[in-house]
Image (cartoon, rainbow, N blue to C red; front, side):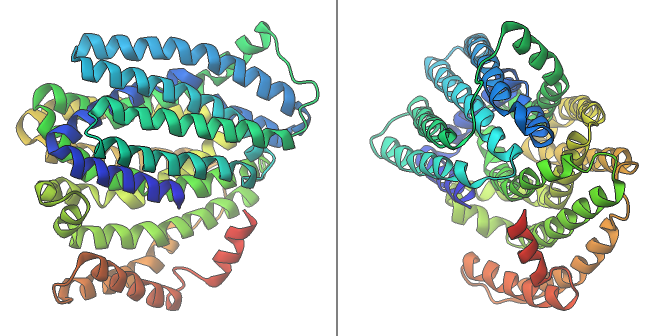
Amino acid sequence: MVRLGAGLGVNVLLMRGLGVEGYGVYGYVLTLVALCSFGASLGMERLLKREIARDPDRLARSCATGLAATSVLAVLTGLVIVGAAWGLDGRSEVVWAAALGAVALGLQASSQVIESAFHGLRTMRPAVGAQVAGKLVLLTATAALLWSGAGVAAVFGAQVLDALVAFGGMAWAARKLDLRGFGTSVAEVRVLAREALPFGLNLLFGSVYLSVDVLLLAQLRGDTEVGIYRGAVMLITLFPVIANTLTTGLYPRMAQHLGDAAAAGAELRFASRVLLAISVPAAVGGMLVAEPLMVFVGGAAFAVSAAPFLVLAPLLPLRFLNNATAMTLSSLNRQGARTRGVAVAAVVNLVANLLVIPTWGAVGAAATTLGTEVLLTVWFRWHVRGLVQDVKILDSAARVALPALVMGLVVWVFPPVHVVLTVAVGASVFAGLGLLTRAWHPRDLRELRRV
């Protein structure tokens, strides 16, 4: 919740402080860094987490090898990011912002290695303090820099401070781990990097899929169109933090169900039920309050973001479900299937964006993103079918549909009031009716506490 709140707070500050065009520049740099982010770690934290969950005795050696590998990879990735910013854009503000973003990325990659050790041991609590402290620093520093009149490049300095605080907190929390035998070798680093390659390729293709629309908008339509699209996509990219948190908690538990389709199916069934109960009403409500929501978040200038947001809102349930099924593939040794699916999605999304962005701009980019997410949903569900039993996703969706529909009708006819009040009324209606239709149950809350 702190990550979600801080992310929302930072974006609100940037939207209101930089305007549509300045926010577009910020979004462009952020996307460029994200596109290259796979290289900083090759996604090895997922591999480490899975292996530590199955063999805790390898904890110290795995951490040392992961930290050594990410240190080298982060430096090389940083050089690529700065070079890309210089070659593709050339503006000093963009280059400096990209450099600071690269530094933050390297620190985050190292933090994730330590965090994966905790998660592999099925405990998230020791890492929470570091994350909370970092996000509070990020929010405070962003506000201070914007108040002082700093430009986009300085705002990325706040991300460096966030990453420094989080890494320091993670390192301090690591004192609780049994790190006897901490050490590594060049050979071990090479083996880890080779084994992590499918995870890294998944991140690469995923970055292409999630980033190519912004980069093409910047090249074909300019910073203002990027700002319009980023305003719409901001909430869509923040809200899945909830799904990612749940699947991160389930990941090491799911990894222990390799070969047990019934147990794996029970985990995925629980995750799917919870994720649908959150994301479906959010999508329905978001579509009904798109324009006032965009104005509330970014100001009147971002009313134009309502159209692409309206197109993107149905993506939420799909992305939540994809988070769960993709996690299942990774934890049950089917990373290759996950990576191939994301690779297909990246190619399809690139071609589709090249066709529609020149004519339809941000709305076209939103449509291609939604269509690609549908493709991923089909792909992941098809490839996970042999690993799990009795998942019942359609049953969970049916239980959510009725209260979501009634909630939508209530929001539709509700008198025009502040959007926050409208959202609160809609959420209350869904919560009450969802309990009756068993879209959610109090025992789900008890189960969440055991994850």
